[in-house]
Length: 494
Image (cartoon, rainbow, N blue to C red; front, top):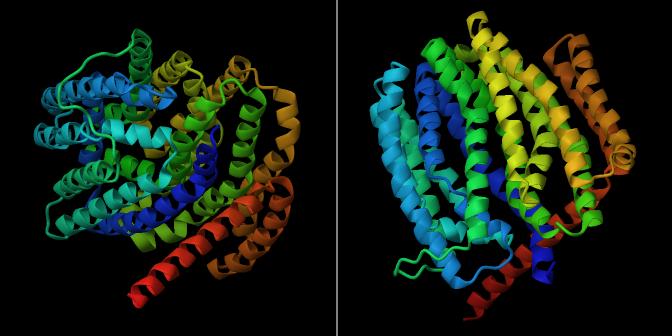
């Protein structure tokens, strides 16, 4: 790896954390207000709209952006061809969004989908313009620029959605916020990057990239089934109210999981792509991910899991109380997913073995779909538990399969991370028991302080990488403060 790439790689978690921390603060605040203003039915219609939009997106996704990220360097003519091919595919996807919106409204008996899906589909056109620029930023690990654009998108989307919800627009508050947020992201990516396409269309793209693109298409198809089939099945077999509760629980149960998953996409995938031939370094980064997740990220999921019954009615409103137990299931599912599923997913993609992710996604999607069809008649909690059971059965098989394909030494790895696994398991088991034994909610404070103190001591011992990360964070903060002070003094002198 080049020196600048190593520096970007080292600072990647910091910039992603800063962007997600600031953006999450805005988005969480907006989500609280939206949950108090809107009703479950609005969440249900929005969930269906996004699922159908992703269906349209899937039809034209030929993996152009992923191909640019995965390849080390591209001639200008190839990047220009990638731009025009992606633009043509985006026009096709927009047409598909119109057709899918109409078909979805008929199949799911939801007339609003005729209007909501094509409107959301406009972002397929606007997002195509800076798509190659975005892919180049990820390939170069330029997360500072990505952080600026992502925060701008989150801020605009959140503020606009709340404003229109207060004005009484209902589900349209989601739609308008999504549109303006995506427009903002596209504009910022375009403005903050230097690469520009040649406005003369070119379609010179190596055959091997087309083959890789086909693999990405089938992978995205399998990923779509895994992520969005639940919404379509529940939209067909249950009421829009049940779907709204499900969508709310699914969305808020994945709040914490979104950050590690984003780090995996923007951090692990490009890193693994450049470590394909260095198995020792590859396994070291993989092991570091597991330790970090099991020790330093797990406590956040554990706290959310155990405090949801307190904060959800108070903050979001009593109308969401029926979703509490479902939300707990999705919190645990989210932790399970980002800790074990995410690194294997991006490792296989980075190695060019996308087809294996496709196979496993299809296996889990079919199993999940059958489980949901059966569970949909037994209530919301049965629906959530069916998804958890399927993931718990499928994921270990996927992990062991990945170990074999990537030639990861399983037993040395297991020996190295066993202390962190035991600490994590104890956290999930002990904290609920201690909390249940408490007489009142204010007893939780000393319990969490004591557990946090013990956990920190053990965590530093078992996953010492946190010390390096904190040191880099403080160094970056000091550098920013020094640069700001220097600029201020320079302005003063002038």
